[in-house]
Length: 362
Ligand SMILES: Nc1ncnc2c1ncn2[C@@H]1O[C@H](COP(=O)(O)OP(=O)(O)O)[C@@H](O)[C@H]1O
Ligand SMILES: Cc1ncc(C[n+]2csc(CCOP(=O)(O)OP(=O)(O)O)c2C)c(N)n1
Ligand SMILES: [Mg+2]
Image (cartoon, rainbow, N blue to C red):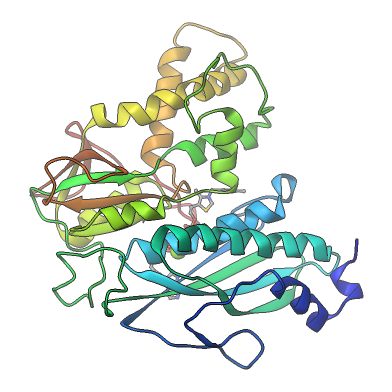
């Protein structure tokens, strides 16, 4: 085990970049003052960071999964714009005492998730640069770059894209009459976070003899620690009027689409039941732990908690899109409601308050 303080910056860089892959669009990669890439189309850029104690804690820290999460949260943002990613800039601040093997695991996690996204989207996504610094707290900040509107480079065709968005799919194109679709999951990462905060043993018996795939306690925790967005689903959503990545929770993120588009998003509770039911064993377990009993009424509380996770939990990086172009949902998507005239978000007609995550608490 070698600490970064024993190696110095250039050797650290050499070790971590040994995990990187090349990309055919890279003209100048890591090593010069800036990277140069050949792009075709309009540039799409996004940045998201993971900060220790705000987005993860050292107690749960697994460096490889931290890399997965940092890459996933950025790649999903590029992808839901209907763009194809072509490079990542990775900026890291870590303590001097960090072991190089851990930093290598972080990089390998980023590279592996970029490869998974690249495979789904038919592109190469190398790390093209970044920055290193030392800090008491761990910060992983990634900038992801992609393009839309080139000669066949976008991932999805947008009906909104023709109206001044450079072929990108924005939050602002939803129309009354559009169906609302969800790809991937919502609620699992939030359940995982509550399990982690409660210190639940992932192997605890919660009466799930045969859990649905992805919903054992371990898998819920893993969705929080290393989300796996369904990038390929975006390729199936060929005619989205609006699209967003659910990072802060459905209530907040669908609310953003409704506000930007000037429509009312009506969610159908029946459609959410398939997302709620698999979370009930974890919810019952947490409710029973906090009340110390299996008291009557805890079933209602568990249902309430599972609905809360589904409505307000982000971080699975599910995708929400609106479109009027499909009779049946495209592969990988489920219909969860409809856009109407008006404003705000409702669940079976009842207003859904915006209760998703906000860094500054409000
Ligand atoms: N420090 C900043 N400087 C400039 N723009 C920012 C900054 N932080 C956030 N934004 C922009 O505000 C918008 C909302 O940010 P955010 O909620 O993080 O979006 P997302 O959920 O898609 O990551 C994004 O377009 C983002 O680029
Ligand atoms: C230790 C810890 N506390 C709280 C959370 C919950 N949390 C942190 S960030 C976040 C939402 C997504 O993060 P953000 O930076 O807002 O991503 P963006 O919306 O910018 O994509 C949530 C639910 C967490 N994952 N870990
Ligand atoms: Mg962000």
